Length: 472
Image (cartoon, rainbow, N blue to C red; front, side, top):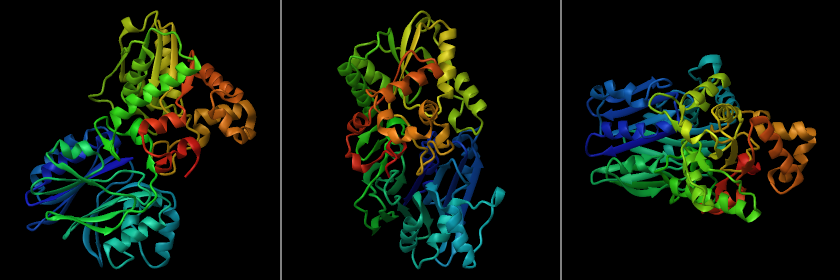
């Protein structure tokens, strides 16, 4: 996915942007970048590949060469950015977060009108450069951003660094957050709220869907009001977000704990709580869900796996399934005394392909586990994401739920979509039993959608649940 951080102040902000951007490292592992502007040098930009090295390690040597009272930084899982653009609107730096499903169509349309792009490998256009080209079609930044928001199929939040200040825009339906913080000398813009509070900024505002603002050391000016409809990504709470972050006023760690409690309560009401020695979380994002499940169920919480995080990247990001599985296995260190002869219930944030979990469960049995039960803290994933990068590299047929449905009933299975999602239906039970056989689970259950929505605490119509429900 990715994240950005920017700051503008009466003082130098390079260190703020360096640390603020680094605090977004959990959102991506491919590219990192910083851009700044100073009266003496003008615009400066640095981009590094961070696939095997943390952001801060790559950029520490650049700090002495960068200076400025306005700067932006980004973590990107897609194209190199920020980009420096010179157009009739002036010179500016731009960073974006999101997914553009119609990028090829938009690129071709702009090329037909005489434009050009710096082609990447395979002739593909850098999506951030594409957004800049759309912006430059209009007479002002605000008009150009609004045009981009209207024409992009997908999602796109935008952060600009101009000579007049920062311009921030949240994507049209607010699928991802954009927050503004302030201190005595200026302002910052961030994806994660904790990134600026750690730097001494106080929360100022959270942009609404499609809202555009200009930020200077003196204040925040609204260039375009927010829209009425919001579809913020539910996975921010169940998986992507850092535990200390809050979105729309809802803290991630608190939501996960409540979500786990709701999951256990739902199972107690159905009489389906298994008899186990311990409840355990699949590190890291499954841990808080599991703690909530343990609290509500009354079953002790334990950590039979400890995640070794100092050097291992996020395993699901690699393009190779073999590498993903190998990395996932290598970074989980077992505590044998909590595994041998034990019946264990694990809670994971989600189940996508199931490949990594299959290896983990096999390893648990090889090390003496008696039973391994699995719970997913979200509903069955039925659709690859169209708006972010969570399941973007996964085709619908790679999803274990859809594969299982096809195996059981062929293409006609999707005529009974609701039944497969429902654990109490015959089709729902068959799907779960089949996945248990594939992956070695003693039992499997998914969090019902209404319980997840209740745990977040926002109206369902304000949440994006596309990957579970298929509803935009």
